Length: 48
Picture (cartoon, rainbow, N blue to C red):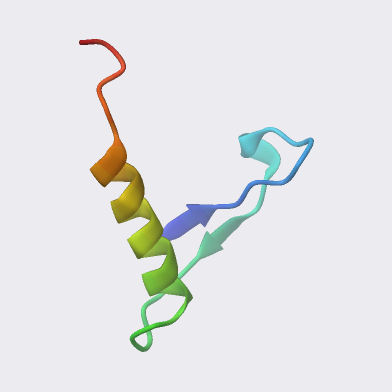
């Protein structure tokens, strides 16, 4: 997974990107994956 981190004061294109690999359950990869699932579960269309 590629995770773009947010750095206050920088545009996303200048923020670091982390390459995450799932090596074991419960690691950083799973933390990011769960966060993305929550975002998509709560997402609503921008235009009806």
